[in-house]
Image (cartoon, rainbow, N blue to C red; front, side, top):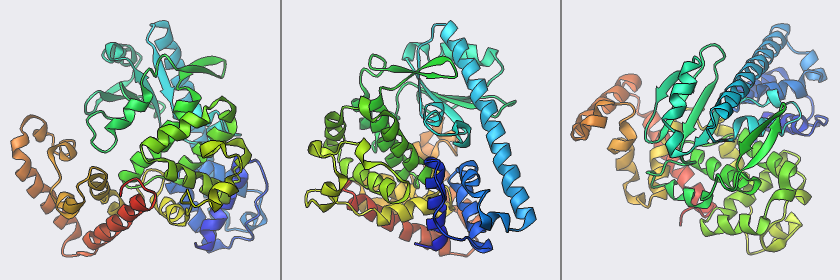
Length: 412
């Protein structure tokens, strides 16, 4: 791993634990690399908080320091505005007797030392089917713009603050062959919900056990769509440290094992221990084990997070660091859906469901799929001209990421 990656991780660790940076002196070139990593992983305010008092930063170029500070402050201020706006809207929905469950976003930020340093561009809420349409009139009448999406999922956007509220009736799209089945773990989700007080307001959210399981599943969902970033690992470790005493660990590991997600979760813990200062005593591991070293040394579990941390660092917050990485989604999704032999074909000729968001005429006329394929290929060739490097990189990266799915036993 490159030195600047290790320094970036150590800065993040010091921010998460309100501790001291111990990664050594950072030269000007590595500072620029760290800034870039902070951007693509959406942790720039957290890194700035850990870095700004370090000697290496004080000695850095004045323009670079000023730019870093201005961006960090702007992100924090905009996050405060979005959070305040969301709490206002939550109270309005409460008064209208609409039962909603808030997950991720503001719930996760509440775990951090400086909540507004942990950015989130949107807030996710779950509603009952009977309230899905009713919520539209309420939010739009309060100035939000309706954004239509597929299935039982939509979004509302506040132009003034930049807040986006994503509304759905299930945690995962039920039509997805890759992860639609994960919704079974979250049956009776409203009955099992709990309240967390944030700024004097009781926010209804997932039970702690279900929320931790959801983090694991959500990370894998984004892995299949290009990857997930180190902030998602931080959310996982912070959740355990904050709410470990409320989690039924036996059920947690049992639910993960049934779906072959236990190895993946154990390697997330390994990354948290190695790089984020995670306190391993806060968790209980499979079969009631309390010492993670026993898990590492056991022949019953596969712990080797080196390949995973490299993929995470290269991915960015939602796997959007490069266009090649985004394009691998078709290969990884098809691999999970049991269609390994058609990965190359599917990457070039996706199905209607994958393309109807970009080619809206497919929503009413799916028979026009061949035309969409042709448009897509011509558009790709126009952008890349005669350069085949991007295609080759996509295929090679896709193969590597499928091997990761096999390594962590998500697929065989």
